[in-house]
Length: 299
Image 1 (cartoon, rainbow, N blue to C red):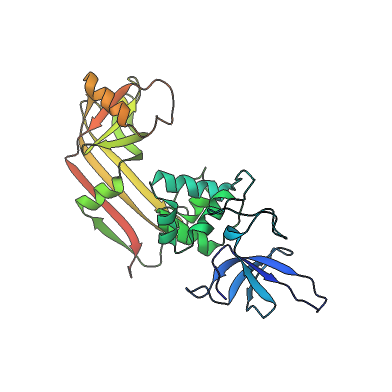
Image 2: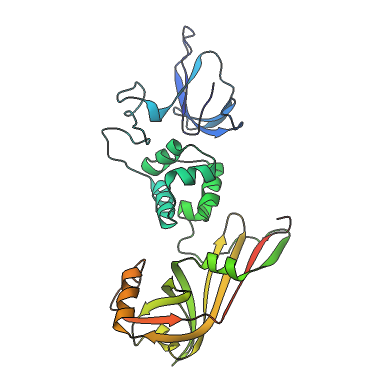
């Protein structure tokens, strides 16, 4: 008997008078998919450790035809219920969005997380309640956190959990800093505005090693033009209590050449989240790039 996460364990119990039971396999204890399994039973929603007997068999949702008894419909090759519009839950939507944002295929994400692509399809396309172990694997594969995939803490500042028992700081080299900076995202620019110092979040892109962002001419980020500024990005993993930050320092200038403005607009990964008319492009050419990471002492 071999199973994958997301398969169903069916216990027929013929001739005993006991009711037929089935449940979703939410945990594997052996990499080859052999028993025992952690099963979330359909009738009680409880998760128990199961050593299947001779009256049990595995049902693979991704390979079933429509109308299989006990199902809400069959599934196609990618785990989508055939004849039905996918109706992902919040976790599935966040997993799919984060995967798309990082440019990862479903197969590559599943490989990184050590799960079957069919099960990842099931998580992304159908309402589901994956275990914490599954979420930890997915958050590690996607470079995010369990909290982020669950949507928790969206209105709270990050880092409210306790620190690691034995944390250590590690300096990041220039190439690793640039890799973590990525090609785009949301960062913070520190400027001396007319009414005092300000640190403002902006949507940014990295073009030819320069950090560029769009803003309004009368906004606080616009005061960066003609000065040396600091630009910072970071990531906090609430579950693993780890994180990193990258700091870019350099002169900022306004991009005014029409061809350059058109090229930046064409290459932009997103519009400014703040909305409104933001036609001033600001470019920060790094003179110094540094970064640090906090991680367990044993890593």
